[in-house]
Length: 179
Image 1 (spheres, one colour):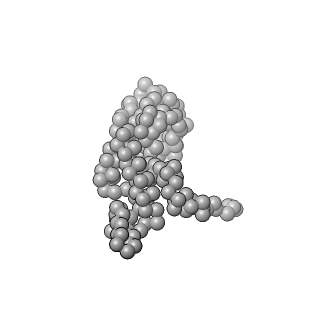
Image 2 (tube, one colour):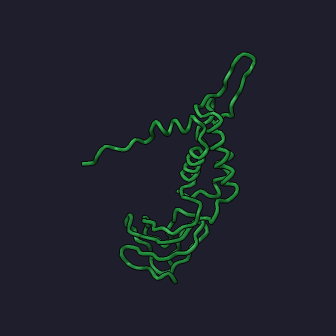
Image 3 (cartoon, helix red, strand yellow):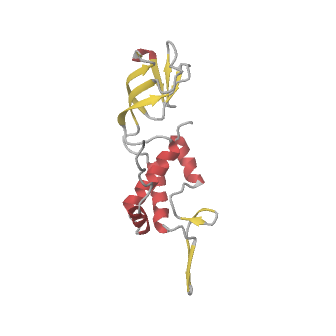
């Protein structure tokens, strides 16, 4: 029987957000970018991926920057790496045979990701973090006497928060893996 679930957020998370904690805003923006793109992007590191094949000779990876393929096992069979070609488009092609059609039965150990985050990705992360800090509560306007301040809108009647704008999504689409 499962134990109690951890909270998705805590009061401390709200305190960091409302205080304009820059590190917390950058972390949240990074998570939003990585979630939108479907993979970590940077830095490069080695990991084991558990994947679903479809019985064809193509295996799609959650990556668009493949470094080294260390090992591949499909349906318990070690794959000869001389029979595997990798593509910058984020897939492996098996030149003899097919990948297992069984869910979760293909394991790929690889190094992937950019050594450093591309500059356009950094620009999106910092822009999202800055908007979140500028209006952490999501207010669209503040008015006091003669002073009237409007905040950058991320949606109709919404400002601040961690949200990707359409032009930012267009930039990130170059780093987004196909679903």
